[in-house]
Length: 311
Image (cartoon, rainbow, N blue to C red; front, side, top):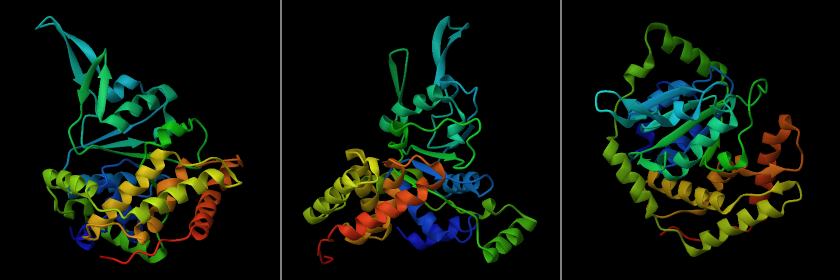
C-alpha cells in the first residue's frame, strides 16, 4: 500500500494535517473505531465522506441528539401486514463507515446501544443476532468544549475507540488554500476511489499477521503497566488498550509496507492510542487533555526502549 498516494487524496479535502491523516488511515487498516474531538467546522464530516470514497465503501451518517433512540441507530422489529409477520428493519449502523456525529449529545441509553456493535460487529434485537459486513468502522465526533446538553461518554464506551484524534484549526497558509479550493467546486468530487472494499478487508487481515518481536510485547506491557502506576492517574489503560496499541502498530507497519512492528511504531501511536483511556485524579476538564499527553510522554521517556534491529 502506497501511503503517500492515499494521503494525497485525503489532502484534497483536509489541508495541512498529514500526521492526523496518517493516524486515521492506520486506524482504518487496523479495523478499529475512531474518535474525533474537535470544534464544529473543522472538516470531520468531510473527512468521513472522503474516506468512504477513497476506499469505495458504504457510508451512513447520524446526527445524535437528546431524543435519539437506540432503535434509531440499530433498527427495530416491525409488523409486515402483507406477510402477516414481524420483520427486522435495519438501522443506519448497518454500513461500512458509520459517522456518529456529536455522539456525546445523545442519552447514555442510546450511547450504550453502540457497545455491542462496536465490540463484536453485531446487533442483538429480541434475542436474535444480526451481523454486520466488513469492513465496519465507527467514526464518532464530539465537541470537547461544549458541555451544555451533552453526556460524557462512559469509560466502557471510550475504551472501544481504537484511537482518539483532533484535526484542529488549520494554519493561515493552509486556510488560504482551503478557501481557494472551495471557491469553484467541492473538492470531494476529485477524491479518487483507490482501494476496493474487498482489498481493504484483505489488508486488514494481513495487518493481523504482522510479526511482533517478544521484546516489543514486553515493551508494550511495561508502558501499559506504567499508566496504572503513575501518581496522577486514577485508572490506567486496560488490557484492551494494550491490544489496541499493538493493532495500530501492526497496521502502521502495513502502511509503511513492512511485515514487522518497530519500536518507533509504538512510540508514534502511544499517546493517541491511550490518552482517552486514562482517568486522572484531577477532574478539571479544561486541562485533562494536555495533562494526559504530558503524563504519557513522561512514561515513554521513563521506560527503556528495546534494542531491536530491523530485519
